[in-house]
Length: 209
Length: 209
DNA sequence: TAGATTGTTAATCGATTAACAATC
DNA sequence: TAGATTGTTAATCGATTAACAATC
Image (cartoon, rainbow over all chains, first blue to last red; front, side, top):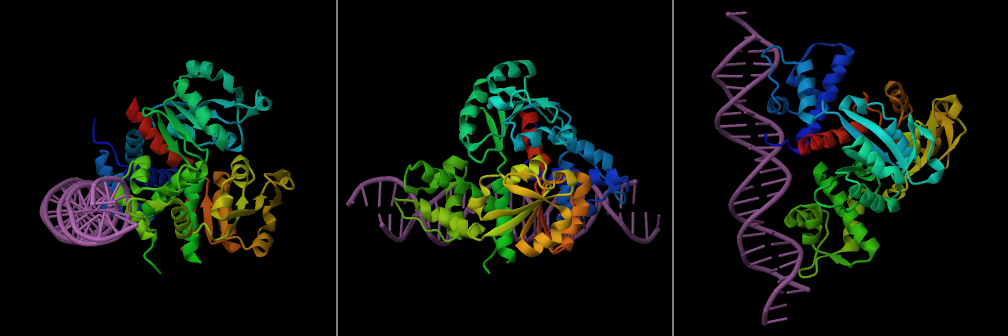
């Protein structure tokens, strides 16, 4: 396997993707120069060229890069072409927001089930999904073979539910609960703490005062 | 003013904060060594010591760092002690989730108003806030002098509403709409795209297959 | 005291930028 | 052709790590 991309590289590619995709959507030009991308994102043009070269996109002197090629190469590099199934655990506001998030389809992600531990919520229709009981977890995992579980439960439920997810065979967890969770080595957890996002904002607010 | 912290530094400090805070919450020890923090976050202990030294925390040989001092110093460095007011624009699921997010208080952030452009939602009580009309924006800004606007509206509404926010005097925007928004130079925008978070996950999923 | 752990200096490493020949 | 823009090599820069004396 090729050398894996660095985290910062993945993030930059995602920014290029959005920028170039928006240009395609607006229909303003078939090609884009590294200088143009760099300017939009306040980066160095050489860095953009290196990043694109690393995922196999070649540009043309005097012309730049073909937008569709850039988009396609990033989709391949980041794995958007692979279909992934996810279950969402926690049918609260955040769980509902994620289950109804319009963009995931474009990245290959399909939400196949929405679960909740609260009996009152079972059977409700949220964002096109009928809320299912946590007790059906094993069954749902068997049926849909999800690659990912999205955890949008309250802090105190996060660890016990994570344990159940792991026991049910889930190997990747996207954790939105504002707490860390302990899992075996082989299970991947990505924490998406709103508060970490806010930390950067708070630091900015402090500095502009 | 001191040299600003780098972005990566801010993110690491936030991780230290959570880790040390959790140790305090569990009551397992008044002090923590750089090696312990480093192990928990898979970093080098020297890096932890440097990061802490940069914000003025001193440790003791043989003892380590006093947890409360670490937490306090990070809170100061990142500006959690400063009170900030935010308004949330968009009373959908995501807006409601953010307006009711339990953790923000700890970081100095208070949600002072929840607005929506949909007449049907005006007057509803969501997460303790009565939804107010977008037409009341100027008034609300004058009354509460918010430091921040959280944007949780659909893609097509993001730009026009951002324009109104800027016109009303908002200088920092936390954008959850999956689109970029154009604002004058002096306005700070932090994009919190769920899809960017997912990009890293997708890349991971692709690699473990 | 002995030894764990710090703070700091020097070395390394990798990422970014600069320079520039190649080329469409 | 002339010139814009690429791809690549070399230089720089900053961040991370290693080493180790200081010290509680």
